[in-house]
Image (cartoon, rainbow, N blue to C red; front, side):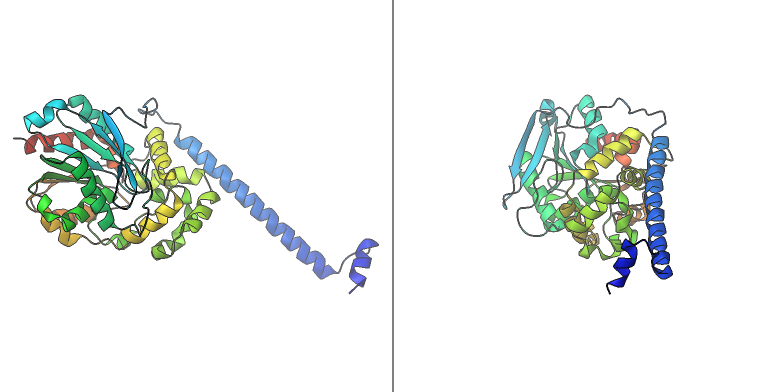
Length: 369
């Protein structure tokens, strides 16, 4: 036992097996280090190349937008939701409905940046925006589990506080559309009475597990370490996601571009904006929402929308909630208007804002005839 240390101290070579083992370990460490360094360098190179495009939104100022009123709306469990209202004084007198916007998973009210800008410029509609629980400037749920029924209840609270009377149109993207379906399921009497129109963008009424909802983009900076465990979403925890998020940085941008957008060379500013919204959602919130989104099934709730004009919009290259999910909604709502946007991914209202805005405004005009 004591001979080996003596030989090393006296300069006598260690046994050949020990030398071989040390060489293998050293080589493995070297290869691993080189691989990590090469991977990081490759990521950075790809991101740099991706950003070298003519960007129409390079000078666009994303983030908070003007509003007449903003406040925290406290839910019965004590959770505060950040709410903003854009007023249009003549809208009520003209009988125009108030528009309530409901954003998707790992995003915030900034999702509707271009719709808010265009509609405010156009005038005629009062608009309500809010950040869903655990997103943006809203607090996390104070108790219990995240589930779509509770999100539907939160939307009901927003409606009651901000649009206590008069007609309204609900506009939901992705999980926001699912939230509207949950509202319809729990409060069907609102539809056709108060709710005179519904807009569902890039969403689904169920079978989300089959679409592998949440593949990298909506997981923000999680990156590829999450891919093997997406099929076991109920096992995800904030700790798992935090470790995955620390694994890489540039890959988050690349994955957001891949899974959020449909054009081959989308605006780098838009990709960065979406990735920034993603990254502001805590890992614990991501994990808790995934569990309910994977079990989402609201096809029966669509019956409540049957008597309400509905506009369904989806990108033809949406990898998160593919077009067939929207087509299934339209199959169950045969009177719905269906807009399939070419060369567009999941954040269709950002990537092809002009197309979405035109469809939305046409829908609103037809409602008011």
